[in-house]
Amino acid sequence: PAERRGRRCAEALLEEVQVDFQRAMNRITFDLHVLASSEDDPLHRDLREASEQSPMASAVCWPPTPEGPTPPPRQGLVQIPAHGFAETFSGLCFSALQIRPE
Image 1: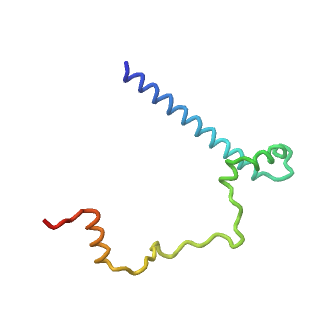
Image 2: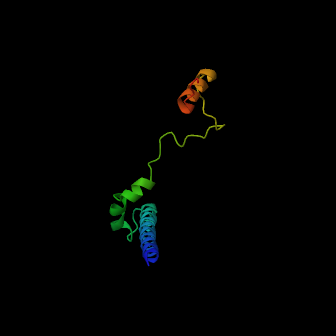
Image 3: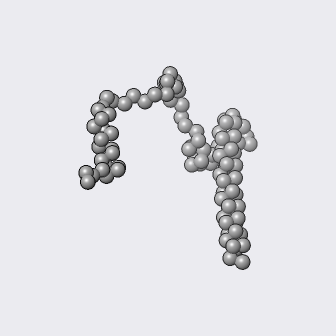
């Protein structure tokens, strides 16, 4: 009985999360559709103002940058400054492994 009740609670919670996600995705899709329509479209004219003020659409639609998109790096390497590996490793071993002479 207790296991069934816990399972029902989990299923109800999961269903609530799924409904909230579906509503959010529908709102984002709707706002983007309204914003992509032409300015003089009579069906979307009144909805445009509400869609422009929507936090969902503003989170998805970023204003274009004046320079355009930045090109991706040629290689996926992160440059790190030169450092002494032996000292760094020794310090890591001392602090992580708590090495003590016996």
